[in-house]
Image (cartoon, rainbow, N blue to C red; front, top):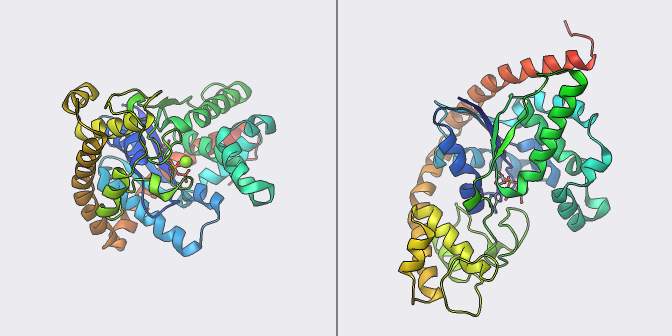
Length: 333
Ligand code: ATP
Ligand code: MG
């Protein structure tokens, strides 16, 4: 059994299909036979300056979507990042070991800050990857299931773990491995199949949101950008849009790409889109019903999160004590 850790930001009312296929599906699979810890990373979401009431609502909605997607609190630890103070505390220590240039090379920071301008960009957005490293390292994590976009942040996390191990002694941190499943590691925007589907960037029409009205979901799939050809073939370089639709179809149905290519041989893009829209709607309908059940009982949901926070804290406190001691901080009484 290995320690697994991952999280998502409550930056939207709904997760999208990229979050589900790239991350949540892997989280659920990795619960079996492992010790998994899953977190709603609300401190990370503060980097985009959310309205307080909206953030609170989205934090519960994100947790409800984890549960509806199959995260099982009887087997895994499920909690909210801000409930475990050690995340922010370890992030400070790690920030004192992170080079300014090293942090400046993070492509997510470069992309997001370019859109916001220097005055609109906070120091929090800059240090986001350091907080993410703290999230992971606090739990002696072996494997981190994430999408392809998080590979560089995982690399920084590994560098920091190795750096502190060499400064403060072996065993200060476990060096984690990313768990990135190639087929679904990057689901693309329906309107711009060269960009990743994203909660906070891109046009709304490019997104498949799990909690959206099924009619809207179907319409967005039917309006997905394809190409001027006719052939339904998996070819990400020349047919990015069609290939993205095939990836989603294959992942949700469990059927191979080759099988789908054979089924749609001689048919048009419209046929593929209609069939995919039906499949997605059939899948989201019971998912939405489950999410609503969790949201209808916020007291029960909060109790699950509180129990998870208590378990997480007991692990995180041990790691933080070790790091504080090795850093030369005077032991607290
Ligand atoms: P934001 O735009 O606010 O950063 P996001 O859509 O990138 O939102 P996150 O909460 O940052 O979502 O990421 C949650 C998880 O989903 C991460 O593991 C991330 O790698 C994964 N993920 C995000 N977008 C995709 C995508 N398009 N395809 C596959 N995985 C994705
Ligand atoms: Mg993101």
